[in-house]
Each structure stands twice: as C-alpha cells, then as structure tokens.
Length: 447
Ligand code: PHE
Image 1 (cartoon, rainbow, N blue to C red):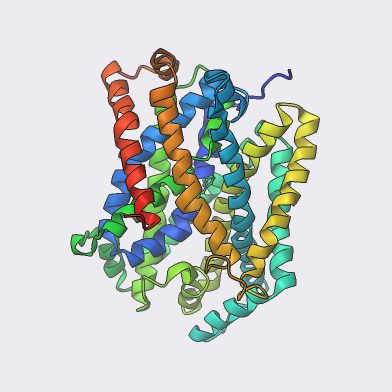
Image 2 (image 1 turned 120 degrees about the vertical axis):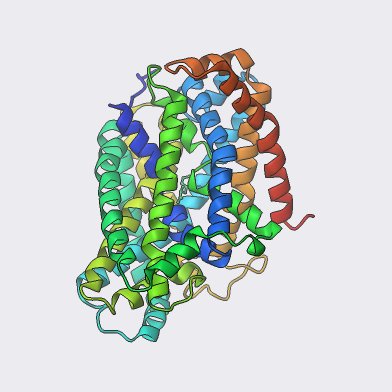
C-alpha cells in the first residue's frame, strides 16, 4: 500500500479545510438568505447553530478521518469492520458528485462575468439591463457549458497534483488573497453614504421575523457552509499528523468561517442599502444587484471585479474538496491512479452537470417533481443527502465507535479537558441527531 501523503503544514491543512468550508454558501447564499429572513436574527441563529451543532460535527469528522486514516471509505471500514457503516463514505461520494455538478455551473457563471467585467462589457448598462444581461448570458448554452468546463478543468488540474502540490499550495495562495480582497471590499462598502442602515440590518436582530422555517434554514445553512455530512472533512483529516490538535483546528476553521460570513455581510448589505436596493433579491443578488450598484460608483467595476475574484477563489477551493473525496477513495494513495481518476471523475461530473447548466436555457421547461434539473440536484443535496450524512456521522462517532478510541483521538496532540470532551460527546450523541431529525422532517414537509 502506498504511503499516505500528508499536509506539509498545519496552516496548509487549516487553510484547505477553511477553503472547503468558505464557498458559495458563505458568501453567496448567506447574504440573500439573511436578506430574506430578516437580517440580524438570522445571523444570530446561524452563529448559534454553527457553534453548538456545526463545531461538534466538524470535530466528529476529524476524529473519524484521523483515527481511521486512508480515505473516506477505508476510515469507516477500519473503525467498524464488517459493518455497513462505510456506506457513509459512499453517501459522501455520491453527494459530492452531484454537488460539484451544479456548483461548477455557478463557477462557470462567475468566470463569464469576470471575463465580461475585464473586457468592459459590463460598464455603462442601465440598472434593469443587468437582469436581462444575466438571463441571456446563462441561457447561452455554448458559453455557459464552456465556462463550466473551465471551472472543472482547474479543479481537475489542482486535485490531480495531490495534497501538498495541489490543494494545499492553491489554498495557501487563494485564501489569504480572499481575505485581503474582502477587507478592501468591506472598506469600500461601509464608507458609502447610508451604509449604517445595512450594518444595522445585518446586526440588529428582529426576532419577530423568526419563524420555525428561519430556524431550520439557519441550521441547514450552518451545515452547508462548514461542508459537513459529506465526509469531505473526514478526507482532509486523514492527511493530518497526529501531532496536531483536532479541537484547535476545528475552532480555527469555525472562526474563519464565521469571520468570512460577517465580511460578506459587511461588504454587501451597506452597498445594497446605500443604493436603495432590496436585500432579499435572492440568488440573483450577485449578478443583478451588485453590478448595478457598482456601476454607479467611481472605479465601481474594479470593485466588482475584486468581488468576482473572491467568489471564484471561494468556489474553487470548495470544488477541490468535493472532487478530492472521490479521487482519494478511488486512487487509494497511488499517485498515478490519482491523476487518471481525477480526470475521469472530473469529466464525468462535468457531463452530469450539463442538464443543470441547461436548466437555465433549453431545459428550463423540463421539470422532474416540479423542479428543473438544477433545482432538483440542489434540493436533493442540501435538504436530503447532507442532513442524512450529518446525522449518520454524529451517530457513528457517539454510538458506534468505541468511546475510548474517540476520546484518545481527541486527546492526541491536544490538551482538551475531559469535561469539555464529555460535553462535546453529549452534544453529538443527543442534541445534534435530534435537531437534524426535526429539521429534515420539517424541510420535507412531513410535520
Ligand atoms: N462549504 C461549501 C460552501 O459553503 C459547500 C460544500 C459543501 C463544500 C460540502 C464541500 C462539501 O459553499
């Protein structure tokens, strides 16, 4: 069996895992869901769930990955031999396959807009023109397919280079760049006239707007943004040395994730309010609202360009992790097999994503269960497969794995107090599963 590759440094691991977490969920979905759910109250719930449910799950995935080793399949097989629990790894693989197939469609749109902004095509359009431009752009089949392909190509090339030379190296460049660009964008946004209104909207909780739906949405969002339930974090932690502290790493990733969510809110809402736009514009917020805001500012298109670069980097570092879990399972640590499998799986994901891309063009009227292919893929992943995966992972660590193995793994490389480990175990054993079951039933409309 080939020697398992390891992260070159702890920082590399943290930036790569944070790169997986910080993606379209935190910076694209989060602002508009917050907009639709009354601002500050939603933010407060999101942070609460991220800490009491997300953090325990993240640490659970790390525990499985580092104690099991290998990949997301062999780790489960080693920890629970001759049982079907490795199905969690298979579920993660399938989920990431579907997820990346439509994630790359949005990645493609970002590349198209980046091209348009650089060539000046986005300048001088009247506000309403941006809606129309977006509709015609994404309905353009050859264009959206080719850019989706480019997004996949970058992902394949990076993953095929392996952990240290591929994912770690790119994350070490892209994540700090993302942070710097975000600070510039926030500085621009909060110095606009009336920026305070946006800041107030983001931070002032209006709990009247909170319904059961808001609560559930906040929870789903916290899982999605932390990449939980799909064994991506299991995979990344199989490459982690026993010397590193799992709880500390999990907390660093959590803090970065929340920081980015706040930065995204601070970059977007003040601008939205300064220009009297609606904060609840939905998924189109990025492609309609932002360009029309920035086109009215001096050097606005430069700032919009920075926004798109941030989005692209965030989407790519998440995309790497989705492909990596599958490639790691298939190549089993063999370098040559890694290259071939990255290409084959990457291209298969691209092919599977074609109907999602066409959902905004020729297949717009083609509906399964009343949804377009894109929406169906998104719905299945976010509302069904991910919660099931998260539930199974919580159960696996707290009910199936030996308690002594779990505790020993957490203590390896860390000085976490026994009492804290006990509380974590309790959350994982009772609180997390109960919450997930309630959410899933609600989202599926079963209760
Ligand atoms: N966390 C990513 C985001 O916020 C999405 C993701 C989910 C990535 C699951 C990998 C695995 O966009």
